[in-house]
Amino acid sequence: MKTTWRKYGPIAVAFMGVLLVPGTLNSQSLGFKGQAIGWTTLNPAEPFQAQAGLRYIPELSFSLPAGKYTIDGEFSANLWASGTHANDSMTLEKQLSPYRMWMRFSGDQFELRAGLQKINFGSAQMFRPLMWFDRIDPRDPLQLTDGVYSLLARYYFLNNANIWLWGLYGDDKIKGWEIIPSKKNSIEYGGRVQLPLFTGEIAATYHHRTADPGPVLPDSVTLGETSPENRIALDAKMDLGVGLWIEVALSQQDFSFTDLNYMSMLNAGMDYTFNLGNGVNLMTEAFGYLQGEQPFAADQKLLFGLLSASYPVNIIHNVSAMLFYDFTNNNLYRFINWSVAYDRWSFYIMGFWNPDTYKLYNVDPRTSLYGGWGFQLMAVFNH
Image (cartoon, rainbow, N blue to C red; front, top):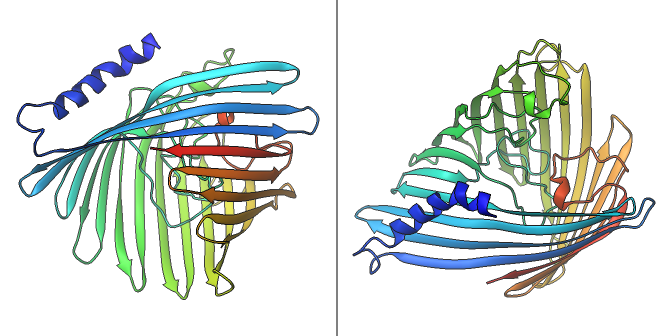
């Protein structure tokens, strides 16, 4: 706990200092809210596994008018603890860390935001080739993910076109689809151009970083080698009565210990809401993950298909289900969720039936046990 405060405390104090500048309290808007989450996950099959956890995310926000512009910000923390029983032993884990910590200067057509923030974009819904800076699991009803320390600038044109530019502070944590983390203390940078196209939009995205395999190599292996990585992507979505989207991403590294230095991802999907009862929404996606010596080569590959359905029973109850099929390994992933939402409370009853070896998403194993079959109960309180 002391280490966490030494690392992040000065930033929090500076943030509070902005709020308490004399003469600004009458004009600024202050807000405080929080989200408390409790969950239990059971995997009854051998070997029996169980997990229980608590998470609390308090959030302080402010907004300060500055003439034609606005200065606002958010500071939130991630406090969680979980206990996992597996292989006749108990493992306890806990963490206190910043969740969001950013300030923004914005006008009618632009914004400049700096700090620990979430950056995500793209057209795909479930299998997202452009999941570069987050680790959102689509089955998570709360869509929680760690942020990145970054500077983000966005400009919005009157015809709905927009330009993004960003710079990230690299660390040795894996984000998105990464297998190899970034070099610690390095600078990453990139941008995105998004243009209107008929009834939708089309966008091109670029990102550059330095990849460092050191943190994920066994202690007995020391290569001392890093490599620049460049990513490019193209995505588009259209509304033609049926929602359609496509997303393609390509990244290139140059490591000497492997010939498979190109990674390609492709996604195509569609959705439609049928006029049955309160409306049945169906979605399907096809996804390919390829690695090879050349762009889009498939020396190694994973091919997935998705079918999902959602039905609002009434204003309180909603039922959704997802089927993922791994064509490469002939594995089927099944997930169902019944949610109950009130003003402040939400409850989720989730069931899953998956292969024992879980290869679907780059999820956080500390707070998920989705291998095998079982169920998860979750209660959420918002204040």
